[in-house]
Amino acid sequence: MAGAQLLLVEDDAALAELVGWHLTREGHRVARTADGEEALLMARETPPDLILLDWMIEGLSGLEVCRRLRRMPETANVPVIMLTARGEEEDRIRGLETGADDYVTKPFSPRELVARVGAVLRRVRPALAGARLAHGDIELDPVGHRVRRNGEAIPLGPTEFRLMRHFLEHPGRVFSRGQLLDSVWGRDSDIELRTVDVHIRRLRKAINERGGADPIRTVRSAGYALDFDAH
Image (cartoon, rainbow, N blue to C red):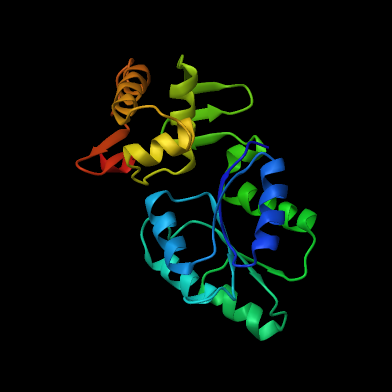
C-alpha cells in the first residue's frame, strides 16, 4: 500500500513517538502536534489524508477539534480516528456523532492502529488498495500505471501521473500550489511553486490533446481542481 499523509494529534509524547514510528515504518508520512489549535491550523494549511486525534488533549478537546474540522471546508471530508481512554458506549457514540470515522480505545496495540488506519484509507482513497480511479471520462489504473480518456491511452510523465492520481482521489476539491507540492512532490521538496504550474500545463496538454472539455479548473488566487461539473 502506498503511503499517506497523516496528522497525529496526541499530547502523550511517548505514545506519539511509538505510534509515529509504527506508521512511518508502514510508509506513511506523519506530522505531529500535541495542541488542538495547532492541529486545526496544520490541517487547514495542508489537509492530510487522515487525522489521528486524541480525545483528551489539553486545551481544546479532541471532540471540539473534530467538530471544527467538520465545519472547515478544507477538512470536512478528511477521515478522523479518535484515540481515547474512554471506552463506554455513550462516549464512543458521542465521538462518532461529532464526526469521527473510527474509534480506538486505549490501551491499544500499534499493530491494531496501523490496521485501522489502513482500513479507513482504503475506504476513502481507493488507489491505496490498487483500485481504478475514474471521474468524468478519465480513468486511471494505479497498478498498471495507465491513464485513459474516453478509452484512449494518454501518455503521461511520472509527475503528471502523480498529479492526475491526486486529482482523481479528490475530485472537485481545490488545492493550492503549496498543497500540491506537499502531496505530489513531498513535504521536504525544495521545488518552487512555479514548477506546479509547469506540470499542470503539461497535464492539461496531454489530457486535452484529442479535444473535449478541459477538466482541470483554475481557481484564481486559490489553485487547481479536477472538476468536470464546472463545465
